[in-house]
Amino acid sequence: MKPRVFVFLVASVPLLAPADGLAQRLGSVNFPTSGDPAAQPHFEAGLLLLHNFEYEDAEARFRQAREIDPDFAMAYWGEAQTHNHPIWMRQDREAALAVLREYAPTAAERLARVPTERERDWLRTVEILYGDGPKEARDFRYRDAMRRLAEKYPDDHDAAAFHALSLLGTAHDGRDFAIYMQAAAVAQPVLEANPMHPGAAHYVIHAFDDPIHAPLGLPAARVYSEIAPDAGHAQHMTSHIFVAMGLWDDVVAANTRARDVQNAGLARRGRRPNVCGHYASWLHYGYLQLGRMDDAAAGMHACLARMGDAPARDEAGYFAGMRARAAIDSGEWGVARTLAADVTAFPRLALPYDFVDALAALRTGDLDGARRLRDRHGDPADTGDPRHSILLLELDGLFALAAGDADGGISLLEEAARQEEALPYEFGPPATLMPPHELLATELAELGRHHEARLAWDEQLARTPKRTQALLGLARTAMALGDEDAAREAYATLAEVWAEADREVPGLAEARTGTSSR
Image 1: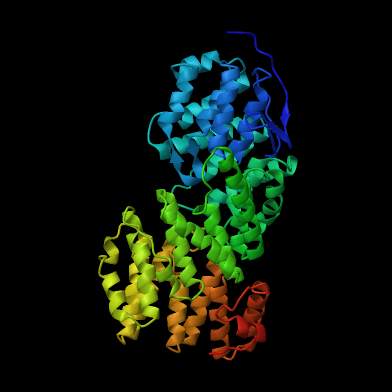
Image 2: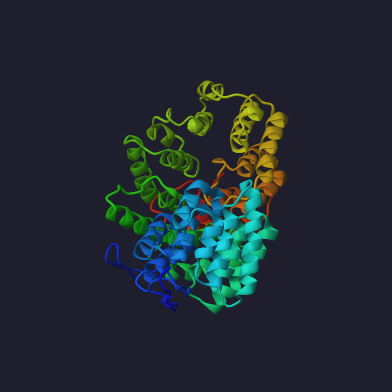
């Protein structure tokens, strides 16, 4: 083993990106290692990218570090970490172990090769992460290992940050407020000590990105985009808080930046731009909420064009969601027909795709056409996907209402709403396409059951703050109940959100006058 030199370097902004000659601004960390000083900047870049969930770029940087210094233990640790995505509950254990085996064949041999106690402690955590046993059990053992590491090195901000992330990675059944608050309590002091630490800001946002806790995450959301302006995920991540608070202008700004940063990186690699992706879909939703229908349509048609050009599975999935939003959130039911695409290569999209067409048919009086689409799918209890079950319950409830069975129809819509309440909260554009509480409220109002409708609107707005379709429904219901103060407040919020609407959207005129047109 060659002699090691202990180096203390700080990666900050701007950070030179040797691979492409561009300055990357990714945040600031202080992670001393025993690696070759020539490899250290690559390691630090990888670490910053890892905190920003830019996994592909992080993997490349860690690999560069170990190519420069094949004895650089922490470079192998970092590259192995890029194969674990805790928030998304994804892990490629075999790929990670293959990286570690390039350092040494066994865990014992790897630890024996590491030159410092601190680095051995770090490597032990990743050996636990990718050790034996089922992933969920290893996640808990890894969480405990990161806690011990952070306790042993209380001044190590990255140990604390990765401890916070490891906590989030144990919420296997979806959002668990107790776990998420523990993670926030670990990450927040790191952000206070180092206001440029990308992981601290990132994990604070993840801990608070629901409508109840989002205001607590707003300060981190306001600074994260400035911490890491060259990380597309960092730009997008801020909008998790903005969506949860109905801050639609901020949603659009964040995802415009995220899209542009991501596509610039794709262009440097010679890849086509992402027009049917995560950032594009959130941007599309933000445009619809703001009434910027022309901008929304431009994004939608770019995604539609991609559907005719060998789309990937995730692109097709985002297309289906954007198509649903384009029809449901605009109230322009004919738009579904203009956004037709072949999704037969993606069987899991058959129901979401047909649901939008069936809903459009119901809303335009084509009951037979809607029924034919519904009959392609089975019983709601047999879908194997609770969100698909909700879609079928919604259609069945609307069919019952159309047949004059008000009690039966409302009962089915209430069941759809109950099933959504049983799901973990999912931030972003509504995952159930037609939000069940919103549909229930709409139908209750149509039946003149305004007191019940008011409760359903309130529940919907608690789940999706400042969602314009729900605000409009609440205003109309409040007016029908004679609650003019509540109606004026909802209309005023709508008028503010739609201040820059580029053309008429349903309810715009009445929002501006503060009086119902129905």
